[in-house]
Image 1 (cartoon, helix red, strand yellow):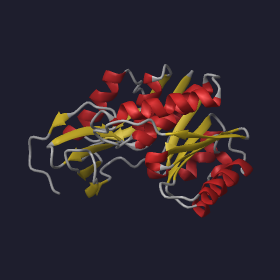
Image 2 (image 1 turned 30 degrees about the vertical axis):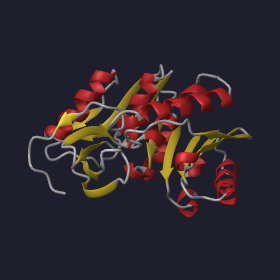
Image 3 (image 1 turned 60 degrees about the horizontal axis):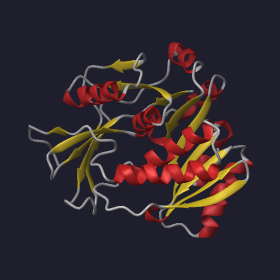
Image 4 (image 1 turned 90 degrees about the horizontal axis):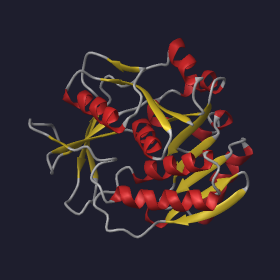
Length: 272
């Protein structure tokens, strides 16, 4: 099966460790899908600096198809991360979008018609193009911690929806699930931080507890869980098996610095 990440990419600059890593929700989803046995691709825009080169080389190393990757003169998107050596107490510093924001053109939309699933999210700012995308491919969408008021206009176009609610009560989680399901979403995930995630697939609801792990870095664990879960469900395995596999894979990612590895040293002065 074919899966395409559409939208954002970002280089996470670990200020204290002087290391940078490739990332971004759409990139992460594509990489984890490729690792999960899917034929994955990525559509997005990278800059002409070292950060853009890191995004491209990492995706190439992972085997992700880049036929519709654009290169635009200017700086790549980046996010500065201040983190202690234990992988905790993460604080965001300077973040810039660079050249990463774009709109899909006709060729991109035709290309998406060759896939079983396209993944994007609120950070990619492609909401206005969701109707055109949905005419060609099923959509997975990461809402992060955005409100249900925001989600209301997006959910009708979505097959798979992901929400982040680290401190939510059971009632709030149920509200999120009910809202998404009533809009026609087939698979809904609500990640709840270190506790785990609640997932719902066609009316079947279960809680997937987080797998205990000595975490090196939790950045990107939610993306890893969603991608592995979605790919397993697409492949036809049971929800219980897919959720368990997703939790185990997310724990594995927590044992690696960065969203999916590929560290590169920072050899220049960078702003905090």
